Image (cartoon, rainbow, N blue to C red; front, side):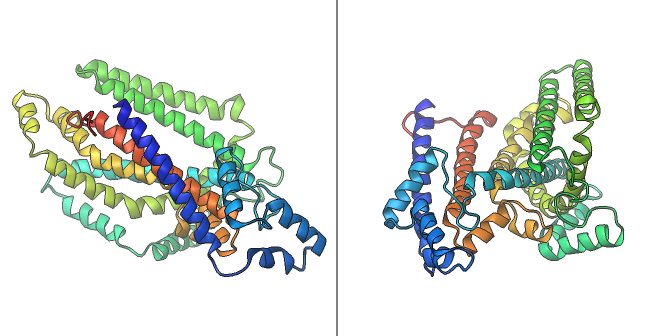
Length: 391
């Protein structure tokens, strides 16, 4: 297993180098002279300042030398300086936009994967029962709807007409005018709080599922959940969260509508994937064996059928998380959410090479990490999968 992991890591690094090389030269192959467009013909930059910026950015050097400088700097954590926002470092721009995309899309992904898995599990287990057709048809209808139109209709109904939710953006500027915190600070504090709370709740459920006796398992599940929720409430409503709570609430309120729309549109795909995997798993011999042992139907469903059916769903989930950095370009555009999706579009169209390559590189790194994690998880979730020493 160790040799396999080392080989996969080496392959991932090699593939990333190929990816970043192709991305760099494709962006440089776009029509137009970057030096002339950005600096020498810019009326807002004096000629002397333009030549100074060109030398500092290394744009007067050969293309191969520029590429080598960027790659070596990338692995040192130096991503260069943005052409469009000179002299602002790319690191600062990414650090500003990345938390916004992570909070929005990780929240949406966790929500619609949880809803889709629960719905698919029960649809498969209760196949042919009342309501199955309605849920399936409704989910497929939402899955195939034209997403930009659906998002705009949700904004029109829930925001413009009913006034239940904010129309767009990720915060209300009037409330943040004299805020003692930056938006990114609140974003990251909110993100880590929710992430840690979710991890604790998952741990409680996992520990309870390991106990076969119903009464102790129920006590652990209930007691642990109450303790985690009490801790969450104390953290945000106690003395430490008094100042930051209104700003976190404003961000959370702006999150509701895009997360709701993304969940409604995407949960059906996970539901159908889970249902198909569950139906296939239920025909396996080990399910018949579990029933023959006299195990309760809930135990057969959750501990045997659902766990095996979780494999393709886990693959899809990890890969979805791996591509979260690129954001949903359409989602961020429709909801005016200033995240990585907007960065990708603006940097490519304006030929801001350092910013564009860095944004794409983050996506590549996350995708490679996601595939690596999937390979490792398969061996954990399904004991039938083993890596031979010859692979």
